Image (spheres, rainbow, N blue to C red):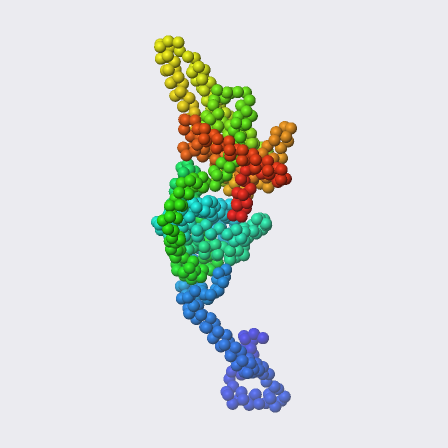
Length: 609
């Protein structure tokens, strides 16, 4: 019933004209006649509330709040010291508590978005920072991993290849600044194969499945810790490597171009490690903690639990045992006598292979047509020709054979196919044979002209002038032979050194380094590398080329215009006889045929890597 109808009914019955006493009498009559007023009592919400349970709940709530207050106070009490947790874990107590307040919360939110955007623009993570991109993992597995490995390989090449040379370089570096060798050693120790494998294992095994960033938080943080202590010294590390390479060049007396290439590579590797890899690890570290720290913030050192012993600068100068004056004189005399020990390892191994060759016997084998019939046995160019033909017959097959399988490499410079590069290098071998032929021709012309004796004084003057001109021409041709062959061997060394470094490291170029080489004697003849493994043949060719280049250089015995004296020729013949007798003893005892002095180096490389 609407309000208007109720008002109309009250007006019709005259209820509005009744006073209070009349309304009360009317109500009493209504009740006496059997009427009843309907009342709906309201339900009290807390009528059945259990106050005992309420008190128990309040006690639990107060206790929980008290525990939270105690937890908030713990980080402030422990941030000043280094936690005693393991190196692979970050103690939660070492992470400072974030500042409270609405303004600080907004700042943290902005910083987190900045971290995500930075990782996204760098191509490291997706927009939400949850998954690592496949592009970054591939770049880490190739470029960044190779840079770390190269720092270790250069360290081993300088200090571990020859013990005597390594000690000398360390002493010289310590004389300048003990921090040099300490930084080189620490930077070489950053590469840890087990640690790197933990980072790239999922990507290599399951490349189609996205890698979560937090799944490899622990190995990435360990790698960041190693680089964090070295980052302030990155320029000093580059200077230390430069000084060490310069000392190595001075002791080895090698070609400047090789060491210049090594310096350039080290400079690029240091830039990759500390400008690219370190920056990525820093932003991932901030993403893991959800806080944006400054790159030089000391809080990072506390979170990473870096102790004083982890920081460079604690090494002193290496102390060598004092020796008396007599011992010093004996050591100096021994160094003067044994000059060969100062040569690089690969040169000494190559000289061992060459010393086992019978040059007189090989002359009859490699000069059947008599092209060098007018050249004496002790002529340096003739000896170089015999050694070159030996390389051509026994080792040059590495440049053209299809028994060695190469993988095509894709670098920032483009596509690299080592099969094509080595084949192009083999074509330069013909040019070397051409210059040897030119030398043989000029010697033949010189000898024929010398045998034409003059019959008069006028003919004698013309005869003398002609011999003088031909002698100068012979000298110029001989110099051209040395330069051409030495440059060719230089190229061979550069290419083979790349293959050897790959086989000892990532093994991405040579696909079958452990395959055994087999040659058909009826077609290819008897080869010294028959039944050898691929990597053994490449090592032997590398040693031979290194020794050949050394002998043709200014420090070698094949350099210069004069002929080799009789004593040197007798010494070569004696070494060849010893080599031949040792081969006969080895074959009679039933031992496997191996290249001279090669097994020991291969064993050393296996032990080293």
